[in-house]
Image 1 (cartoon, rainbow, N blue to C red):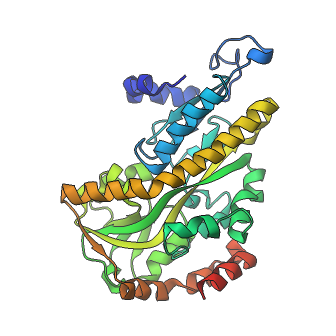
Image 2 (cartoon, rainbow, N blue to C red):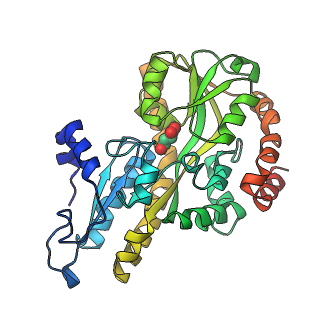
Length: 352
Ligand code: SIN
């Protein structure tokens, strides 16, 4: 059953209580979280899917599509509960929650896996893609990059099964000054996601970097704790970052990709037919996400333009090249040991 409207009404206190009691993945009759306690064929399962962006974003819309489709295709035998916008777990606790099966599905950005699966930082490498059109081929499951995502031993060791790669899109640099050359970043502090690659990238351009949870970025910008950051148009607009920043450089210098994971204990507890439906629906949700990501970012860009609080400057090819020369191949080489020789070689060969 879709519980979004009910959850919207429950407010922060009730959601906090949910977080404390979430044991998730419940079968019918377990711990009061499931449906009818009929057992056998009538057994039902609750799948909590927590994420940090709003419902309007490429991740939010795909999560809702997944919820509706999975419930329909399983005749309600899997009840999906989507908790968006860090309302159940946020950046600081979601990774632990999925490993403990307190929540069954997540779709964190690759950078959020840095401590549990460091090779996933491959997706944080600057200038990995020139346009979003390159993503499916560069990260196809049979490429070295794809293998790092879809057959990642660190994720398997930590109770996570990968079900897909979703996109948030290409990142832009937001700030309170024009950013047209690396020197424009000197002396300024940028919010990053918790990835060593991203820290090195900002520092190479002359800025300093601070990892801050996604839900806290707006207030950190508003209070001047940081001068800027890097994010996709949909994330900038939906978190209202553009209302407290005067400039956005349309840089397309990096990518935010989401690794869709399910807790393996939960997955293994499902009957085989439900496992198959779950895998197929997740694959189709990945297609749904990719089919919509460009349009959703474009809509957010237009909203930002209409709001008029932040001026957008598109990098010229020369400006983009100047930023690229500072970090490619140097950052790729710097993280060769973490990401793996085969992947770095494949990526550098593709850049030639
Ligand atoms: C997300 O898109 O899930 C959040 C990315 C961020 O932390 O900037």
